[in-house]
Amino acid sequence: MGSNGEDKECNISVVRDEDWNKVVVVNDVIFKGKKIVWEDVERYLKRYVGEFYKIADDSEIIFIGTELPGEYTGSVYTKRMHGAGEKAKANAAQIIPEMIQIAQNGTYENNRKEKHNRDAKNGWYRYDTRFAMPVYNDCGELERYNIFKARLLIRHSSSGKKYLYDVVQIKKETSTSCQV
Image 1 (cartoon, rainbow, N blue to C red):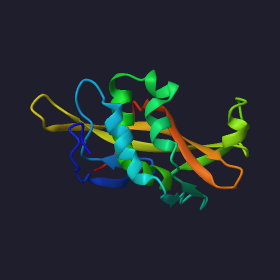
Image 2: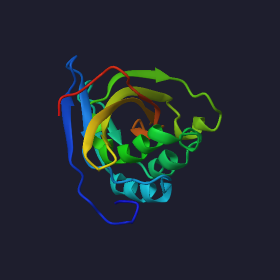
Image 3: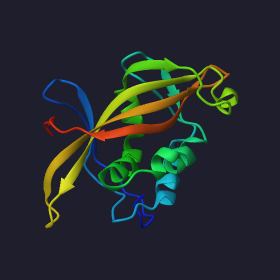
Image 4: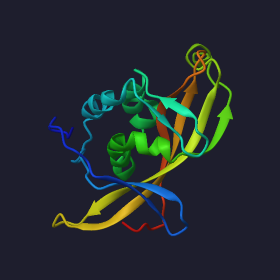
């Protein structure tokens, strides 16, 4: 769904960079413009609710719960974003399944806030993932791809299930390129 509300199939692929690490490539930027309309991103994310995906690296199953769309678009982290990082997060909504599937380096951490003791009774996991977004020149022609690192924030509920909670720590890489 683009910022005008219409559905659009996106062109996604998983490639390997020069160091042979996986990168999810988004070829269609659907959330465009100077200002991201986060309500449109939230509406887009709702399509994943009830789905689950397996992390290839460790075979963990990650569920998508009802809190993801609101947290992803309304978190303190998201509200502080601007520029390329903000557009990258908005458009990464298209590749949630693939970002989960290529995630690596899962690490556990205890709850930091009292309010999380109910929702994430068993703590949190963070996984590394990477994705690439196209950069177009003034004529609308593809110039290059920017590669971003990100962390998937996974809450471990009292039921034992793991739920994607947010995508955070999105940082543009400066010296990595990918073959597309």
